[in-house]
Length: 322
Image: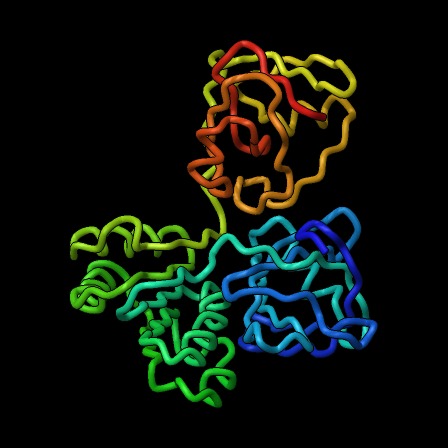
């Protein structure tokens, strides 16, 4: 089963973790084991037709009887979290994809691994903590939240054998947040795994740099990306859709996805921020200007793939395999 293969699961349990976060537990409708995954993986879920969102798996990969995720309701979001909270009920079914991992634990090497979570960003790090504990690895999980009431998956942590490796930090903002992070990072270690809101991760990355962590030891999972600001009157290019031969002009103030849709052509998307990978498309011709956070540096340099929701073209013509 590939990462893009959809299948149906039953909603075994829905639980209020905090006032804003619900956990959802899924099981195979067949009663068999679910597809395997590694810590850091996510699944795509379609809570209502035409809407797909990605959520990290929380549970131990050794437990394939279920998938466990956490969803924070975002009042100013694009509808995904509201659909999850409002539409999914215990005993119902929903379509998901097999897990995909862009945030895997790195093997090899010795030393302390630091797991730094901002809010709901704790979800993939909880899966990592369970794996590291089972492998008797040295790690710490630092959970940053607005208050004690905002701690999700509290029972999972307290009932584990590694709860003494979890430190909680409440309501911290710079400069105090910076001071706390520098204290945590000052002793060094093997690697940092980081997930949370972009401003939080920016502070962590800065602190890691200041305290001497090499850049390649800081591994990130983004929730969202900053959509590039396009300046009207500059950067126009011609978009050719190879399968139909249609040619469209992409102005500097419109995304490729917007232009394609305005031409009446459907293309599957989800986050539309260059994070999830749903709209990944093959490039046949053209020089891509990447703005995504999904493709690896090698994939971006290769120039054969594009995330048309955010990326652009620096040549006059861009030909896509659509």
